[in-house]
Length: 122
Length: 280
Image (cartoon, rainbow over all chains, first blue to last red; front, side):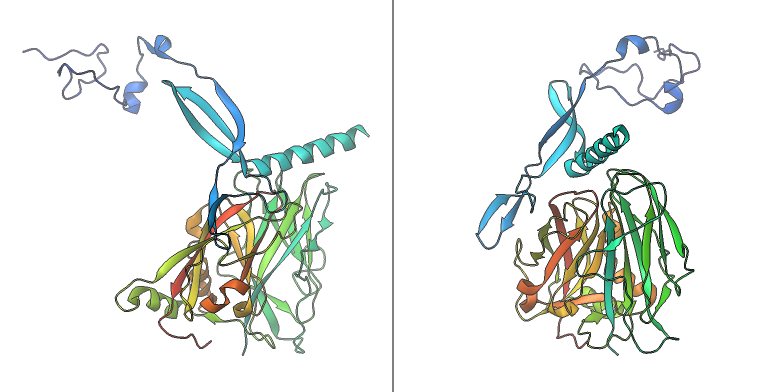
């Protein structure tokens, strides 16, 4: 029985290499050193995903003891439901939220920038 | 001696920018140090300082004739990160004395149109008329470890608080508004807290705090705050753990302050039930 030969002579054969189980193999994370080696299909295997910034309600709820109900959390001054900005993408048909940002903080920055622009134009 | 743990938060909306400018004390807060009648003994100590800007980094300073110097005094820097809100900017265990009847000035040097807040925790060792109940670390640690009648008695009470949208304190919310599980007649030591958003400072006040606001800066890393009051007590070998009686839950309020209008924030207050009435 001959050992499987790596395509790159500098790349060591991993234990179990060449073994087949008849089941599809999930991609295995490569060691950092191996990733630095030239990959034949590196350019072909690159995939690009669109990322969207979405403003949406957080959907947060809490228990209101006085009323005895679960209710949507709202801003105490405006009464608006809590909002967030979400970085969202779709991978293998599944929508994935990458990160969320507090809407109040971002919109406060926007208002400051708008005010600064208006003052500089005046 | 009656001690008092409280805070002052100062703020300004829409900075002029480009040079140091004064902040104003927030509602019910004061930049004046209480008068003790003894000008040569520290009236208290500033134990923590936090600073936050809504859109950019900035400088801050706290000064008076008797605090540092009368130009910039204690001058510090604050980074900006839109997601992380604010920084704790004071040495953990080094406390700076303040003096009877002195008036502090709080300033920032930031970017035009930004909102800025700076606050500090202050501890008065002898405050006439204070009825605050503050426990030492050792007592609370023992209560947590021992439990009561074969049960652990540490629980988190959730309350949703919205800091004010214009840099000042927002609407105060009763401790039992969203989660009413404190057992009647028992004393509870407030160990610390966690939140689902970073907020520059929450405050808790009620009959057991002498109606003074005890500060709770809500760091983005909850590990800093989950045992906030235990650490405050441990670092200083003194009483810094607020004790709240369950019968006061409806009169004990939490409010919040932040320059970035973060909106409604869930806050979980970690309490340890004490096996007997705290005599503090």
